[in-house]
Image 1 (cartoon, protein in one colour):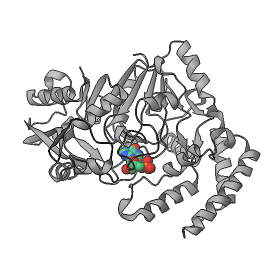
Image 2 (cartoon, protein in one colour):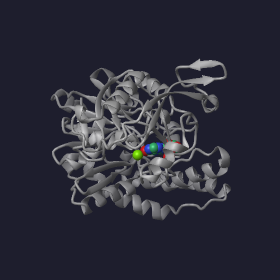
Image 3 (cartoon, rainbow, N blue to C red):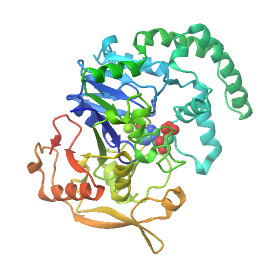
Image 4 (cartoon, protein in one colour):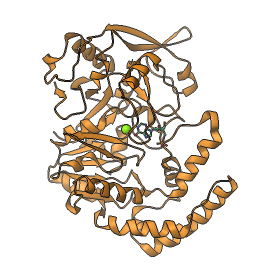
Amino acid sequence: MANTILVGAQWGDEGKGKIIDFLTEHADIVVRSQGGNNAGHTVILGTKKYVLHLIPSGILRPEKVCVIGNGVVIDPVSLVGEIEKLKSQGVRVRKEQFLISDGAHLVFPYHRLLDEQRELGKKRNKIGTTKRGIGPAYGDKAARTGLRMCDLMEPEIFTDKLRAKIKENNAVLKALGAETVSFKEVNDAYLGAAEKLRPFVTNTVVYLHEALKAGRDILFEGAQGTFLDIDHGTYPYVTSSNTTAGGACTGTGVPPHRMDRVMGVMKAYTTRVGEGPFPTEDAVIGNMLHGMGREFGATTGRARRCGWFDAVATRYAAMISGIDDLAVTNVDGLDTLETIKVCTHYKAGRKRLEVPPTDSRLLADCEPVYAEFEGWMRPTTEAKKWNDLPGKARDYLKTIAELTGARLAIASVGPGRDQTIVL
Ligand code: IMP
Ligand code: MG
């Protein structure tokens, strides 16, 4: 299948976990390139449900290699917890199967506390983060004051650096009136986690280049989605990494010309968690989906905000990441609707907009202009082939792919591996 970058074309939670799991069958290696344990990928296999935060979903297939690239931020204690949780579910994480970049930055408890404090301080303008410390950790990385996996592998160096970082951050936390962190507790917990992670830590750039030379196929697993991208998203209501296709290169050390294909994953409607503009947000579809028990977050359990499909957004996403193929998920979420709306463009005053404005405040004022579709009003969850889908569902899917400007490659009608229609 060659080297594929998989990105979310909306605000995250597009169902990437399931599509990655599906595509992994044809890949040799699955790599995460950005984000941290703010991500939550849910994979359902038979009757078992696995929720992954840092470890690529490829881990569920024992013959595949999973890599956490240099662009990811890692909370080592939480990563050890994730490995242990998998073990308790019968999935062993073996040394030959799992590699962690020695260049990946670390997330510390003071990052989480600062994340929380910044959100409290902002009140009405809060971002609605996952409170995993992601922003402050990437902040340290950009400020060149972060600690990396390679530091953690050198206990003496790590302890010295950590002592200084905790002193500095405790002063800030104290000034904010927040709780502080204990150097000893953090040091002990992190050095404990370090020994459990040591077998996996290596220069993953070299590993990936050797794999490329050997002709192995790599799948780059994106986390979050296009409009949470630090550069291209609805800033400041974004996450702190590059969630678009370019992030797969910088976050792994694999050069652009080695990438063969970009697949974009999008829901047949739109959701977003956290604050920030969302032009097609709509209570009708939100109440319907929540009533079905759908659209609650994998990481925080928060009810996701819901809205109609926004082709202005997905078209822009396809442009930024160079999306070739589309996977449309949650088609079955629309099964009971009589009328389905699709946003084709925005109106801003008297102006017609084909792309979202850069300024979040202007985006918040955009009025979505909709085309209406008749719903198919029957279950799609049993469909195995394209022609099993109701004609109206096929028309709908063809239209949203056309509006997005990419080829429809996969339609997903439920969480199961066998609920995946390949075109
Ligand atoms: P942070 O990444 O925790 O700093 O959160 C920043 C924004 O990104 C918030 O709106 C979060 O809800 C959102 N976000 C972060 N990770 C995910 C994800 O995996 N899925 C969906 N939204 C996310
Ligand atoms: Mg998620």
